[in-house]
Image (tube, helix red, strand yellow):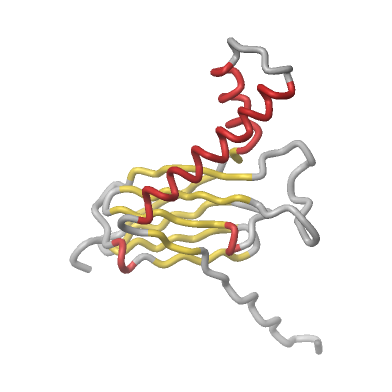
Length: 158
């Protein structure tokens, strides 16, 4: 690249946006992932009963990555940004309702997996956001570039 030339922008990749009946399946997958990890903790303790809530909360803390979220709204839309380093677009799903957005992601282990988090860090993310205005889920757009997920949620009637 010659001096003074502009670098091409990285192409934005789009996570899957889930609406309608498919939202129930998304919630079940989140619960299943946590439940599976909680059972692994139960097994590791030698099937000792009486620690089910402790196992569940530990599983959540191990699996679910806390998110840094920013949002703002204009007359026409609500815009939300979330920092999710280490997640590829195909590992993220967005559940969109007129007054709520759910973000679910699970890193796929294997070759090419990112080292954005330490080995014992969370490998999934889950976050639900209540929206300040009613939006049109069918017009929602999302882009994930360099670990920054940007959601554009047009308000109803715009």
